[in-house]
Image 1 (cartoon, helix red, strand yellow):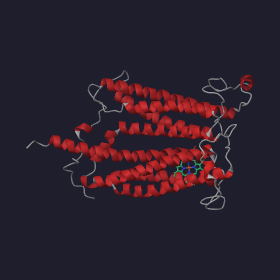
Image 2: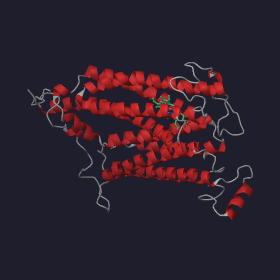
Image 3: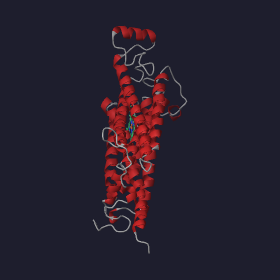
Image 4: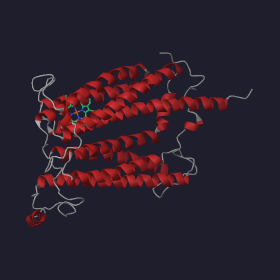
Length: 396
Ligand code: HEM
């Protein structure tokens, strides 16, 4: 490896002044705990990201133990702040909701999920507040200001979808959108954390000699392929949500075949009829076998496409020294996710496997976002380095 010192664009170990961390600025106000607002912002963003993981996992658990209708009302549970526990409370709850007898093992997962999601909402509200105060105290701060508002808007919409999941009795369209909303929240919180720690990426780039950094055309190809993979993974996650919401794991227990053949009887029209309204509720799924098989097989084909496009991307990433870590993360997430998907089929969705398959779906999405942000920040790094070099060079 050529470790010659970087001269022109990538000045060795020198991050352009414009790219320096603006966490500690003179005008930044410090609160009573000794933390600056910018530091509080970073800590809250990290806490929200970790909590969102827990909320998504709890959501998967609630659905997988069939507790989605554990509480027939919203936001309370049979009119309680938590859930009815004593015999007297249970009798009163059943008198109020005669169609849905209380099942204690289904009330608590639903309410625990709601409370964790509520806490996440409050945390995001705190992030919005701190980001605004931070901007007010330091107008030159480059820390994101619009993104927290977008995340807050999505969390509010998510709360509405949480309510419709219950009131529309697990209508698959709503269940799938609720899952996608959860993944979007987590993905945007991941992006917020990357943005807040961008100086680390710049430091990472500045540690490489110029010969190890790719040329712009290479970056362009990798970026385009990453975007294709990101779109495919989002589609695949939507198909996964549709598979789970319609209980379409059940028609195939063999792999790579399904019902002993590579192309079983399928009804794509009714499997993907998004206007379906089969009642009285959707617990356990209402579609017939060929419709569910069509959904299941589409998710498998989607996985094949994700694999086909991600492998060349991983190879291209691995060839670039500064993107090697992205390649390793993406390869690990993809391999584990496919293995979990196949285990879901062969072992008939065991609870831990199904929850992990949900979480690794989001990890795969995050690894592509991580990779894309490396590429985008690399471009910014390059442009600002050129700018910085121009400013530094003496006028002739
Ligand atoms: C390549 C990447 C893949 C991604 C991103 C992905 C994503 C997802 C997601 C997000 C769900 C919904 C989970 C939930 O609601 O809890 C799901 C469900 C499912 N996936 Fe995948 N999946 C992938 C590959 C596979 C593969 C290769 C198979 C099997 C061959 C598979 C089989 C299933 C099954 C059976 C379900 C339904 C599980 C249930 O009802 O709980 N997946 N997938």
